[in-house]
Length: 495
Figure 1: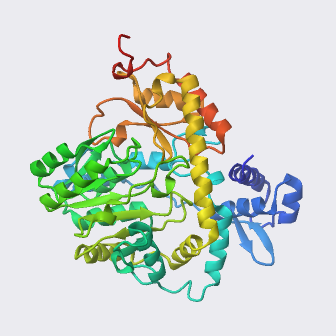
Figure 2: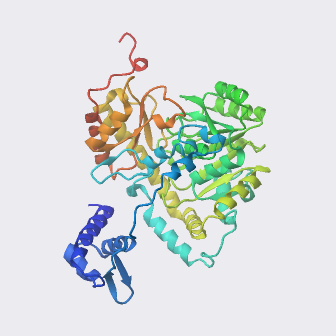
Figure 3: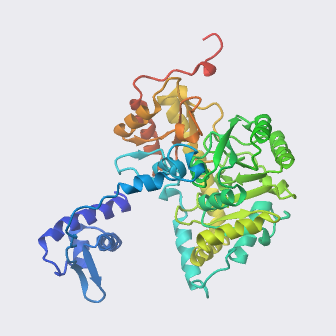
């Protein structure tokens, strides 16, 4: 039993036992609960915290924990909230860009953040399982940060100078031209993307995006009132010939891309297209937002990584997004925006208005983590673990669903992009997979409109280990009504 499930189970037991207590009566002490339920003191403490948050018990330091008074429900009829349907639909003109107006796209993001029940194997999530996180190093970094003078003081709105300097060197390289003054600290990558799009594009304007692309980006764009315009991706990254045409046709001033281990396809932008992309953007007078989310997710057998686009950009074309979250913990929401020129002040102003600043304790913790020997050790261990999990997932697919094995599996990131047979009912398949006890991601939300072909995204970092990953693929096989056949373009000649 994992820690989270034991806490939830104990909370459920205590919740049921509370029905036998009158209001204000003291419940058994932590020592008694530890002995009675054969759990750790930490589990008891966390279960009590859940009940406290639910308002079922109250804690009195030095006295104990007591059953809380029942909540009093106000008498009278339930209010009529139907008026909100009209109010929320009265968007400005850009609200018609996509079904649902400014709220469009959030469902895919919420689905990715939903934790499946304990009995369901998670091949859907975008954050590494606790087994892959540097939890001891994080705990030590947090403890050291807590002892730093001024940790709970207000930080500079741009972020701590030392952390900005670290990101500048991390993005531009030791001999790069980026400096701390070119960097803003953000509350993770999603926040950085939100700030960048709000700063660079006016509501109602088009923004060019890769197709397929990360659904969270589409949600950010639509929430800002922008119109995402797709530019197809192939095995070498974004089609730069079509990118030039898209700039000419839309007069867009922003293109958002993931040149390294693209989500969801896993492709790496080829050297020729890197050069072409920057030249096309310069000619169009446009910004390139480079989402470098997978830089720290390279596998142990990955070829040497190309430099970020931002490292080859003296003219301020590239606005770079970098985050520590994926490689550490979902709760270490620390990222960075880097840019050159007047755009940096625009980015800074937007971020200040939205959030004032990133909490200093998180920044101090991040600084302690990346400055410790444990950081290098963790990245090395993570690279090896990601390689092993990719290999396990591919082997399981070859055994169970050979027609779905991708031709060029990526050597970075945390997922596989699976092309399904034409005509596959993907929503029905994912629903059936959930009934079989495995959660996978439908490919449709990664496209700005109708998907040109059916896909699944299979994540291999959400399970505790290889055994659950193999079992998840086996359950996925059971979700298919019959063994999938190879798509026509993958069949051998003469077949």
